[in-house]
Image 1 (cartoon, rainbow, N blue to C red):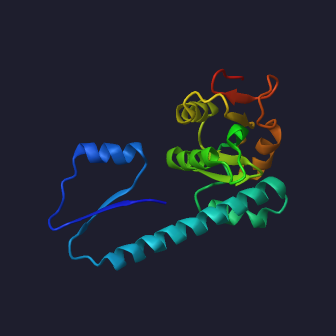
Image 2 (cartoon, rainbow, N blue to C red):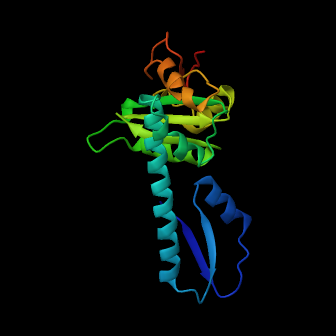
Image 3 (cartoon, one colour):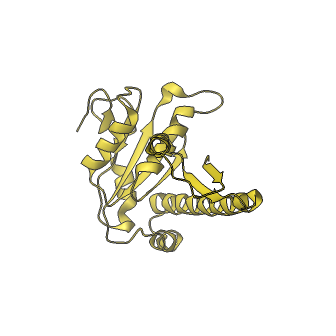
Length: 199
């Protein structure tokens, strides 16, 4: 993760150009007083990053349990509900693939796509599994999700998205996961190619 910290003697007035640039590349921008020890700044950010990483790991584990072991509600209800994923909400699970960019060192495009999804999703969970991204959207319509993904992928015809049925119960997340077909370029699948859309 990257962040831009500007330390000046007086309170800075950032130009709109700087703010727009940071928003465009999804870079957090912070200001701090001139006499603030840099080590204190780094300590605070380290604590924030560790906390966020722990939360994301915990949520990913809970989502996996909800998908693969739905009958074991104790393994996922509490961590999900305590983070705002309530029992009576709409949930949609997606699988995203872009195997064109697979390499021995991983898939850099998929990694960047994961970061972009985390940035724009209002409430959700995303993790990588078997060279795919598994994404849970909460409280959003399929049309809104599709449009956001379309905007992010920028007409990349190598990206395929399998979208599951939207369910209205937290305990039914596995049903959404089970209903989408593999994210492959197949005319019979509910997949979104960013050259043409299937529904």
